[in-house]
Image 1 (cartoon, rainbow, N blue to C red):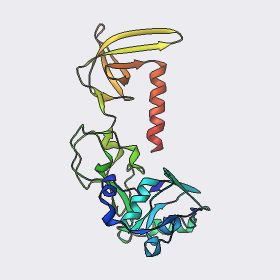
Image 2 (image 1 turned 120 degrees about the vertical axis):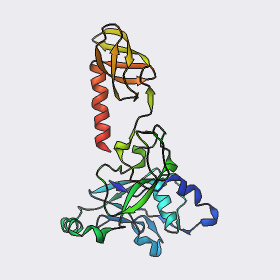
Image 3 (image 1 turned 90 degrees about the horizontal axis):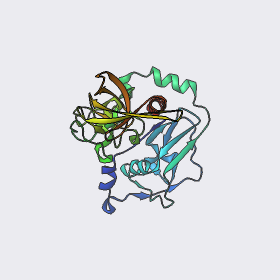
Length: 254
């Protein structure tokens, strides 16, 4: 899914003075060629209807309604979303293989400015939590392979290292906010088949909820790998493996 998303900051800036041409959501949001435009979504879009807001690569694509609203405003349209919709589903037939081939054959220079990629709206320090206003879509020639298709995938996460304004936002740039710091004493719990054991360990690094962390057993001095469940807490054993598997699935789905 490649949905066009704008930062919340741009939406906030589009006040009554910047109100555009009122449009109404179509009863049937359908698309024929894979390039979802404002005209596919709204009645009365006029010339702005040619603006592409998403690329449909399957039989349907799900768009964030709030971000579509912002995209419409940028194009000079005003959709009030009086229904309070959270998502929009655009459907259509199979995407033409010939159209896909033509797109791949087009030189990057010719495609420059035709792709929307999520970028950082400001410089962000390591450890800062990403907020909606920290993200904005910008034009680019190609989409980086690690670029999130939905801002919700990285909003609320923390920067792993300093991030530069204007640079493409990548999933590897962020992680869950750290709830454990290196040197913290934490309780590690093992639970399986009615057995529950706990031990004290020293964190050998920082980690957020759901992330793996190396911990030194304060008694044996051996290093074990745990999964963080909260401030000062972690688990090992079958439950930890289940959490790691679930986390891997969520990351892959981004």
